[in-house]
Picture 1 (cartoon, chains in turn yellow, brown):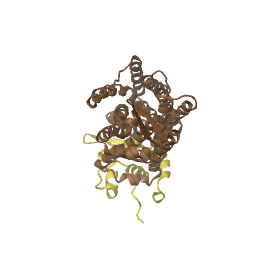
Picture 2 (cartoon, each protein chain N blue to C red):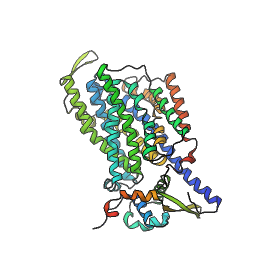
Picture 3 (tube, rainbow over the protein chains, first blue to last red):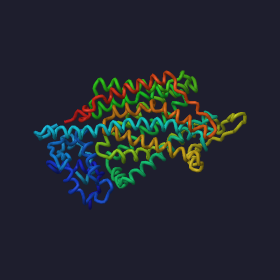
Picture 4 (cartoon, rainbow over the protein chains, first blue to last red):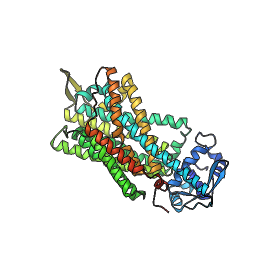
Length: 93
Length: 381
């Protein structure tokens, strides 16, 4: 049976738990099959979710570099973020 | 934080990026207070003066109480329509069922029990039974309780300066709404009113903390739709019907009103609140003003939930109670509108109100004075 689709922010946290490190480019590429075509699947919205997850301590910035004139942040999940995965639906654990 | 860059310019850019996020959170907090101040004035000075609410609200005690809880449920329902429209326009409708299938999403439903029936219901009933001053003074304590709960449950970082700011905001909110205490009732009903007034202090604080926990994993704009919609449905099934039954029982089913010298027998049934709710949709003035008030109230909740998520419960709640400050210009705005309908609103700011406004402003400044401390909201990891 196919997994149900997670709310986007929760999916970003789950995604973080499957990667050692990631940028928003990785999320946009790897989650396209699940959220493509949705108005929320944008760089702007993605950045809001990663900023929020970073502010509450679930992911942290491990590297920063310049991409054109923009800042590209590489993140990784924290122990606190990993702990919150216990609230995932059973099919996602 | 472990940023693996040796480039000071990049570190500075990261700080700027985080500061931009924090500033958006603080702006959302201020907007939540601003729009809630406007919503309150629109609801009490305009919506309740039209259609099915007009006579009960202006001339009755028990039917007026039914009108107040009914209009609160109506406000939440129409606000949920506005938020649904916003979620649709921004391509997030599908997030609602997804969120409801997860524990964090269902927490928003749980939170609405505290914020809606317990918070708003208790506030309206407390105001009726114990008087506006007592209800406002007791309920305005909610940011302090919320900050304390946020500290314990979410491990939020709140220093002494921010605590002083939060307390200044709630003292200012009490002063703006202060009037010589004059309870509408006495004896056991008055003390019942005091008890009901404690409900919002606990209810809104608990709502904020529970929602904040859920919004770590759910988009705040989705969580708030869930909160508003379920709050209106639950209020219709609990407080609206409960107060209607209470009013019908106390009055024996008929309240005799003196409407400008004319005696009116106002019938009260268990379904009177529902009747008011649905009749409001057939009265143009009621409908227009509830749509406007609910837009202000709905987006106030949107901003409040965003601020809770972005800057934490203590600060978001401190900003939310600045609605008392914004209710002053909103009161003067209502003074300009009501003559168009043939009556004077008669709102006038007193010296005490202005002192309260000054204290709120100082409190809010103390809360935001060092935005950098918001880069890491919690003591985790």
